[in-house]
Image (cartoon, rainbow, N blue to C red; front, side, top):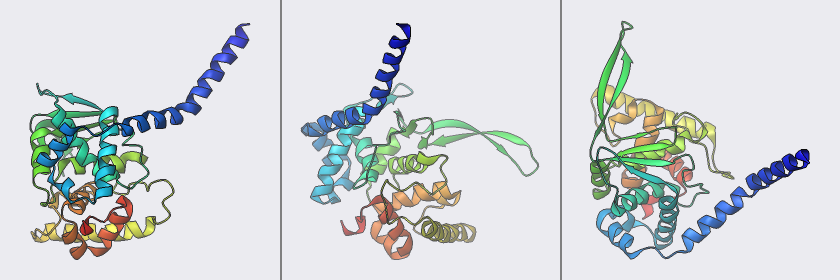
Length: 275
């Protein structure tokens, strides 16, 4: 009898695991079927001008993605900050730009979005040329963790949303890191979406290495070009920084880095230079 009970429980567990994608799709379809709240529309119009550029079909897609994102992610206020509806909408709108037209699981690895009122401080240990370790304190606007959290400064989030054409957007930056981390540690080579037949890893690497080398050369020469020098730290930061530029200064990126723009357009499945 005990054997039959154990087998029955095991069968139920297997059926539950197999059925999970179905129930997940069903739950998300119900969320997407709900009308987009009017209060959210007002927040988008007032706080996220970048959204105004979107063609109608992408605008609608973005709003549906936002509904799922907000329904599935926990938003936690830090340092006494109280999370508001406006915070959820502004963050979700910018994050969901990255998953338009793509087979997506809505940043499945992200469980929580932690929001500080302003820049937050972290301690970092570094080793100098003599091998001496030092503890340094850094002020950050955002951070992406592989354990399922994205940390954001609300002040920087608002400023990044308000100015839609300066190539600086902390939400896009940190959620680009999350895409990069979907197959392990961030390294500037995010995995393509399922079924993407256009992605060529060798071509991607060649184009990105050339653009990354150009940025490093600009840094060494003291020249500030289109891409922020912060992206010269490593390939992962380069991908996150150029993702900011891709969405906020697409025409400039296409003009100065045409091959890089084509790779990003192929990866993100959108052509913001045409918006």
